[in-house]
Image: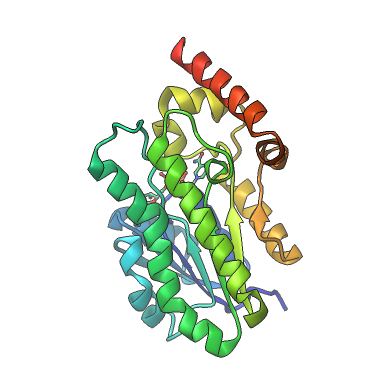
Amino acid sequence: MNAYQDQRVVVTGAGGGIGAALAQRFAAEGATVVVNDVDPARAAAVAAGIGPRAIPLPGDASQIVAEAREALGGTVDVYCANAGLASGGDAGADEGVWEAAWNVNVMAHVRAARLLLPDWLERGSGRFVSTVSAAGLLSMIGAAPYSVTKHGALAFAEWLSLTYRHRGVQVHAICPQGVRTDMLTAAGSAGALVLAPTAIEPEAVADTLFDGMEKGRFLILPHPEVADYYAVRATDPDRWLSGMNHLQQTWETR
Ligand SMILES: NC(=O)c1ccc[n+]([C@@H]2O[C@H](COP(=O)([O-])OP(=O)(O)OC[C@H]3O[C@@H](n4cnc5c(N)ncnc54)[C@H](O)[C@@H]3O)[C@@H](O)[C@H]2O)c1
């Protein structure tokens, strides 16, 4: 039997892009999927496209666990914390921009885990999938709130994994570079410089996740080269920072 047959899955921010691709893939594997999005029309459209295995659930990602659990008959097997804000700007970005990024990119994950863990630890199973970004391992030029909060999302996913892996909770952190979604378009000239040239389709992200889940991997890298950049950052931070600064200067002179 398929590993995901009749699994009860929640995907936040699933009204488009990577979240929609994850929801479609889980449903194709036989799961029942709650399709959450802050935009009701987007959630409804993706759920309708999937068919009877999908349940649309509009609302903010940080507040939907109880409703999602009820819609799924009392239990969530897989929770995909996917909704994210591509908050650009430098240190001078508005407090509101920093706060929104913190809330959606980090605290929505923490709030969901807080509600999911008691049931998962009692059952000895549960799966938390965090859509982070390569910006959580590396950084994104021109986007301080995004870079900082995606580091936070990765740190939280790592913490969940190291704390609960012996108790049946599996955690995966998806860290892609560019993916062809509305968010990439919204990333403007920095996105066009850094992300667009190697951008992949959202379905390729879902493929890499399913391969990584089968292999029991924490880090899901749809762009495998990210592992090399991450290694350089760890072993030679000044070389890595100089390379990133070179990108920054290229962007400034565009
Ligand atoms: N596109 C990329 O290049 C890229 C690269 C790395 C990581 N990511 C990450 O992937 C995730 C999905 O991004 P995407 O590219 O598919 O974006 P997208 O803009 O295509 O889709 C994001 C969806 O999330 C919804 N959303 C936003 N805030 C929400 C909230 N608070 N609650 C519920 N839904 C909300 C939006 O309405 C939208 O439908 C994000 O976490 C993003 O940071 C994207």
